[in-house]
Length: 104
Image 1: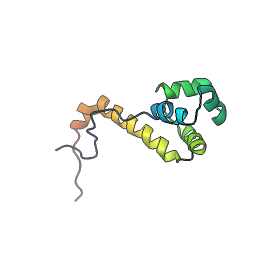
Image 2: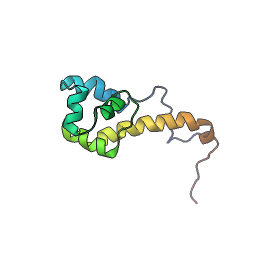
Image 3: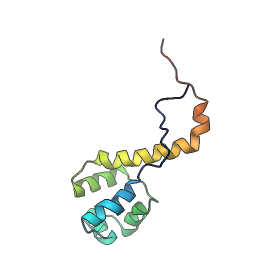
Image 4: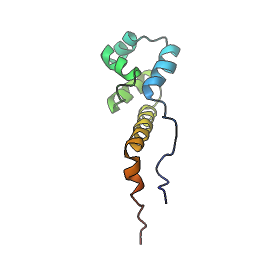
């Protein structure tokens, strides 16, 4: 019996850095430099994020949500989806051996 809580998604969820790079930055005409300045982080931090080499932290989610008028949960949920997908791929066989407990 498989665990219904484990995602069986075949395609990796969109990384929040890709969303930032492909959707938000062009729509708001932001460069790496201008985005970094607006949220008071380094250009390196933005580069790592948009190149998907950095995860969105809680602090970054707060900054991005303030800048773009959405919620920190938007950014954190996107990051969480990527991390869970990657973890499932790393731990898949080990997870299959674990059986869900039933109360009672």
